[in-house]
Length: 170
Ligand SMILES: [Zn+2]
Image 1 (cartoon, protein in one colour):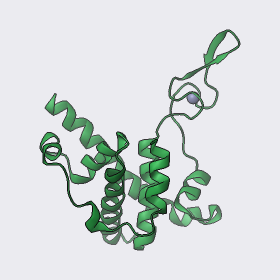
Image 2: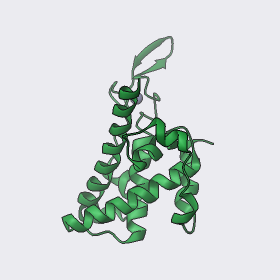
Image 3: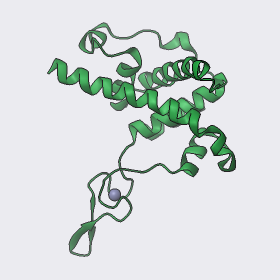
Image 4: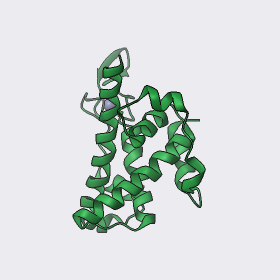
């Protein structure tokens, strides 16, 4: 199952019950010692682990609500989950959708710089796309963008933590 499909299922699940996803394989936690539970879940979600993706959404939503409270950027539980799922969509799908991150595309007989990403290989998530992913009206996005930046900031921080943990573990 691809990551998009997994996300669709995760997001459309009627109730993301916290208790269902509490178990983590011990060896995995040990392998990523030093990385947070959220970071470990994001790492596993990258390998199309559906349960880890559910877990990452829940953990990120919880953390976003806690951080949001402190920063007066309040999110309801439903909003926090929707924003967490949208932020993870970005973290798990960073590549340009046209060239799949290759930076070049085939044109007739030659390969040319991908015009969608200007050769960066990275997909730039525009406000409209972010609003749609969060289930928010595009016209209202300015009201939500700071909250979204906060949520994706937490997700990116955790994603980086795994990269660092992997370097440390060799
Ligand atoms: Zn591209």
